[in-house]
Image (cartoon, rainbow, N blue to C red; front, side, top):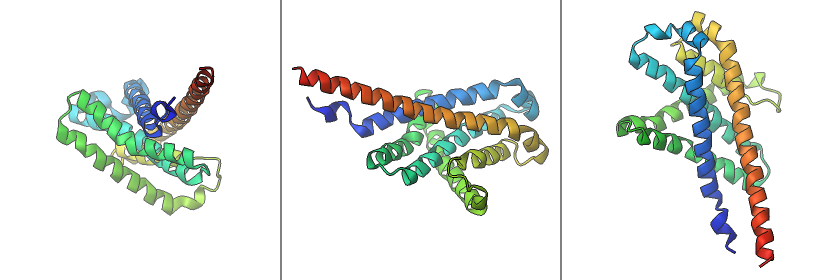
Length: 207
């Protein structure tokens, strides 16, 4: 039995990145349809291009949270195997989302912009962290949750302080929910992979 054929780590991470992207995209659609969220932004009065921009901001905020959280997990986790999994997830987030866009027949030039947009947002949030790192002394808390919440709400509201103030508490809860959802996806996939591996090993020993 060739176990590498069944458990190629990179292939598993690509699949996992796709699952995470699907989850984030679905949650962005759910948030976009919430009446309270729309009312704060006067969403129904906005042009279609502005409505699309707000959805894109939801997605890129969620993706930035995931990307930067994977970077933190790579740095903090002592196990090389886990580090490789987190690295592969991080590397395939934008690829998975662009693949999803292309399946929806989005123009190639617009798809390719996502790589730059994600890189720009992550760089922005890293700078925010560097400026306020003294506020994140609790190692059990993910600093990218509040940083993504503040940054994302600011972009969604185009810097309108009154709207940011209204949106931020609810938006912070949404980002926290995404953070837990991402962790659960990784944890559940890890359990399934280990269980499948044990079953194949047992079957191979019986033949």
